[in-house]
Length: 167
Figure (cartoon, rainbow, N blue to C red):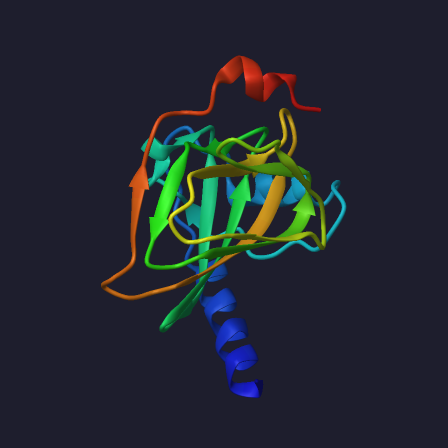
């Protein structure tokens, strides 16, 4: 456990120090200032999530916290940013809400509110989306198995009218 926590701390420090700025993204300092006003812990922001932005509505940042068989990343969602519907194959996904407010929804079920301390497990092979509530910030840890057998199918965006109706 000590080795895991030490690795997590080192990865967080390295990620935090190596921030890059992408076009149309607020600076990490601006995001941290906004997060300082929401409930919960504030983890490292990481870098603009430009490699996956085509699968998100709004801006997100990604801070990988571990690089082994279990992938752990802090994801920061800005002002209502959220994922498209998607399915993870070969792994479940555990979401640990750190700060702010958001939602996760499994296809065919009602959305579940995410607030600091809420842990939600998305079973393997289940269509879902997750992210900040409309107009809110949110950070969560994403914990998933990391191997060549793991993949994600990115699907359609969440219906905008439905999303905006969430409070």
